Length: 338
Image 1 (spheres, rainbow, N blue to C red):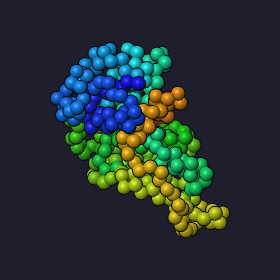
Image 2: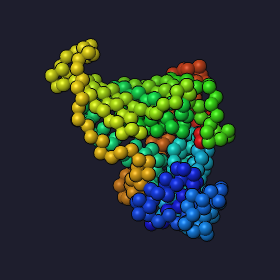
Image 3: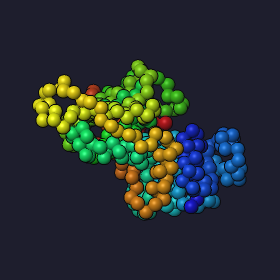
Image 4: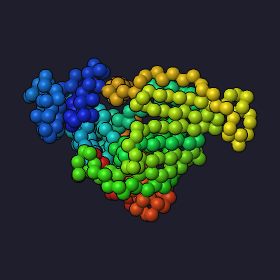
């Protein structure tokens, strides 16, 4: 198996390490700045460093391609690679910056029979598998709310992960979104050409559960998830490897929910694997190269992107409740996410 990577910034370098961890040869690298590639990977053969992605996959014919460029180029590069015959593509999130391009990428993958994955890394996480198992076994009762907070992060670049995680844990899609964009106007750290504001709002899911998001630009704190069930709560702080579960005892679950002061003692929960982007991306690669169903296919990437864009539509319409799926008239609405 031969791999190739388009884009060799920080995340592209993580993909490079992930392929090596998966035992896959990286046959070629492509970046608009070849000197930066040589500085980051000085031992990589210079004749296999490209600046033109089409020339790269024509010359190398990779079995799998990682698209780790900036957001506005994700869909075009992935679509072009699939149409050129690349059979497997791992596309970084977001898969596109508008729904029209995302749908075109999905169509190309279907037409060519290509395996397409969007790198929502928690889909491959043993930690979240364990959380889902615990919830499925009734550790906190039915999952009813998810709260996600992160300091000063764009909805498209980072909260999109939370949106996908919500769909993964609720096992259904949202049916409406009501959101507000943050107008602080903090310059995007990846360049002035990118516009990806933070925001806050609520997402209502088809099973009646709710999710609350705040990535406002008036805080600078690490992100966290809180999963609230009928009788208990998970608190997840990935960066500090804190996974805390508390729940009512079996006897206290017979009490009315209005007895909200009922004790919630700690419940043993062991996180199987510390959060590590390279490890999770390596798991994504191994899944993509296998015959198993892709754990984060393009359809999941489309849905998470749609949730980002729904915040923009809601804000543009004065904070209105926006039904999902989005009306096709919004397919061209483009957000230049880094």
